[in-house]
Amino acid sequence: MKKGTFGYLKNARQKSLIKSGLFLAAVLIVYFAAFFHYKTNKNVFSILAAVGALPTGRSIVLSIMLLRAKSASERVFEAVEKVRGLPEGCSGYDLYLTGYEKSFSLSHAAVLDRTVVGLTEDEKTDCALCEKHIRDMVRKDSHVGYETRVYRDLAGYTEELEKLSAAESDPEDRAVMNMLFGISL
Image 1 (cartoon, rainbow, N blue to C red):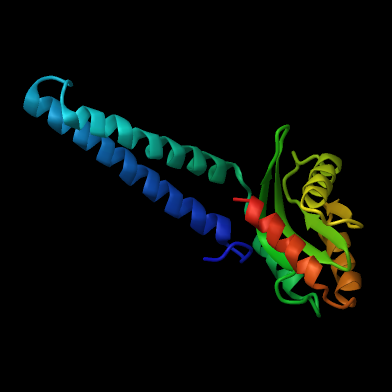
Image 2: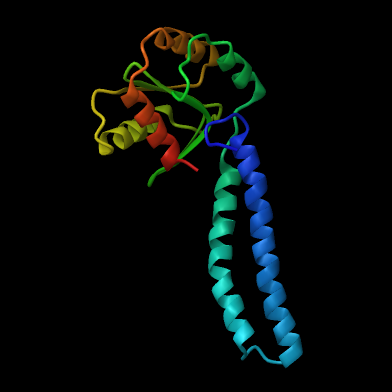
């Protein structure tokens, strides 16, 4: 499933948990099978299990991050899909941004008419800090003149999307959208 499509986080979460479980099982099987066979952990299979623990740990950390991320609700999906004129490739669902200070979960985000707008359903999200984080990301990627707004209110967000969707699609807007989803999980 492609990043930005509705249900991406749910799908990615399931795949990551399965992958982490398989990695962990493989490491444990290799280690304990060799330990019981040789009656010591001083064998090549112990080293193989230790080396295998590195990608396993990375996979488990990714799974934990995906578990923390909030997916877009059906209500948001239905409301956004009703907005007419949203250009292809300028919006997406299930955006999870990680920063040094905090992580931010956006149910939907769009980049239109040199404006980045996002909707969060997570009550813990600090909208002002999220806006600053997005502005910094956009600036670091050499895109200038972009406004940023993050909403909690679905009605206000869809109203803003309606206004912005009337503007012409700009290739730089698509580049900013791809940058946002490229940095996210």
